[in-house]
Length: 435
Image 1 (cartoon, rainbow, N blue to C red):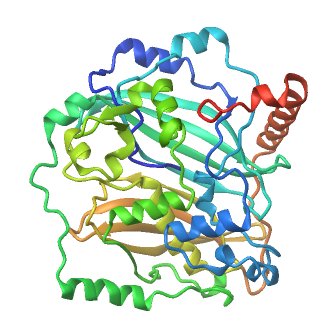
Image 2: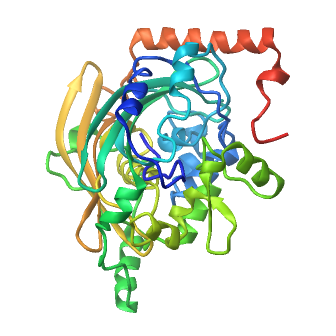
């Protein structure tokens, strides 16, 4: 789905124009390979393990390279949400020149954040998989926003495949573009009470952590699940800067801008100067520091630094994979990011079964899952679908993508290898930041 509430640009003078909206619509329906390489490009034993640890998941399916050998998967597999952070460089034909020229610099200087979207997963990310991505803009809508006046809502599809052109999943991301100046002037969040904890309150949070349990190798059978059944409570937080550091250390990247250090920092500033804003010491620093620099967050209208929506998506995935056990399959998640999760906030995760159904040999359970903060505000809500084993029907086949999508995946990957062979690896693989 998303890496939510991210800062993508830094020029505070930007404003949304009718011309920008029309230019954005030129991209609707066009499909292209994504040539960016993220911090994780291959699902190695360490990248899988570190990504799970990055959001606090101790599931041995993900962190133990031997455990998966005795499960239905016969290998170590990755958390489904690792697709949000995994991508190698994929090459393909460019978009039409006129479109590229007319959309160059689109929405530059405009504040943007991810408000939600959807995920579908068709195959596990297995140890050894190399991940590629292609896709494009599906819709562009202009509207008035309560927070920042005029805004643009854009939905983009990302099709994730492996080195065999197998479709692993589809992410649809909804991004909202707003004027930073309008957002700052409205100061909607002034006076918000931020998290502060007594020893007794921390003890209550620790008590929830202590009782959390993973289903693991005890199958949760479809027949044993009842509509209205509640998922065990889970807690995440209180949110600290350390949590964000650990999440990034686990592999959640910064693409497409890739903040850097040292000489690479210098090169990156020359490449995308609008992404850098001087901090209180006069040093150009990334606009993305809104996630760990509260002074910068306040400068654009928020009371405190805040998390990534992708982090909360990982947390909800964690609650679902704990609940469904080793034989379950997380098929879909779709929802909205409704509030920010600020430093000091605690998220209490809950969920319930809302429906059961059978589709052929597949036994599906629909659930509502959500995070609610210590102020009682729901910050994210997702509708999820999980496939469970059946006492009578066994595991059942995994869901399959549309045949045309699989054919497209094969064409895209074939073109990738063709370009590497004919144009030359050195020229294509040259990174815009690295030497």
